[in-house]
Amino acid sequence: MGIEKITETLIYWATTYSIKLIAAILIFIIGKWITGKLTNLITRVLEKNKVDITLTKFLESITYYTLMIVVIIAAAGQLGINTTSFLTIVGAAGLAIGLALKDSLSNFASGVMLVLFHPYRVGDFISTAGVSGNVISITLFNTILNTPDNQRVIVPNSNITSTVITNVTANDTRRVDLVIGIGYDDDIKKAKAILDKIIKEESRVLDTPKTKIAVSELADSSVNFVVRPWVKTSEYWDVYFDLTEKIKITFDDEGISIPYPQQDIHVYNQLADKK
Image 1 (spheres, one colour):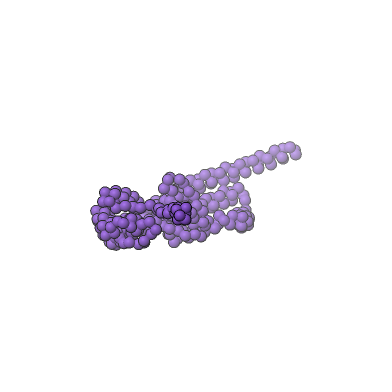
Image 2 (cartoon, rainbow, N blue to C red; image 1 turned 60 degrees about the horizontal axis):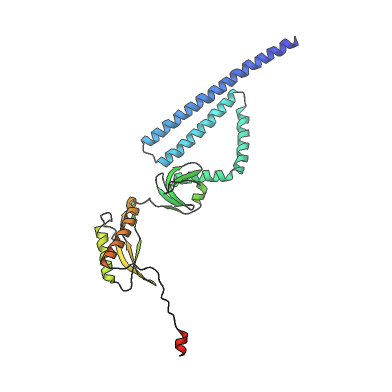
């Protein structure tokens, strides 16, 4: 009789909890599927309404993880777990984990600030925390950059908000700053006229603001000009390199020297002086 009772009990428990376990697994699978569909739907709606891509990605992450927490709690409730107690335990564990992961929470808070205040967006070229590159994505905890030599750099968000951020491509135009030196024996007026002609022949240089060409310094080995044309930000480096090359070639053709640092050494013959 005892064996029959134990067998019945085992069958009851196996049947009851097998059904609950299967139901919990189904809730998790279906819930995860629905979560993915809802997240994709929200993302498409935001993209259709041309919401900033940075904010779109941020809301996508928040939506997904929030819905997944709801699904996990629902699955746990199906297993007979007291969800009130479960939430209490989760809250206490969350506090302990939060203290242990304060740096991660700091990154999360910084991520929220970056999304809200928009110091940069996906696609911008920025310099921050000792690195420079194009912003590939802004996640809850870090910002991913691609450097000019195609390296992937992952920067914690808290490192970014605690330092200076230079958004190189934030404005449509930039000023090219060139310093061109000529020899002291060269004709300053001629050199300035050549520089002015080169700038006027460069079609990518903007008419406004006006280009500044002026003598800026009487250096040790050269007379230095500043050449400061304005260009579209997207054409900055092309214009910078092309102007540098054209100035050198033209100066060579026109007999204008570009000196390099040098020193004159005077040797005295002490024996000759004594005689």
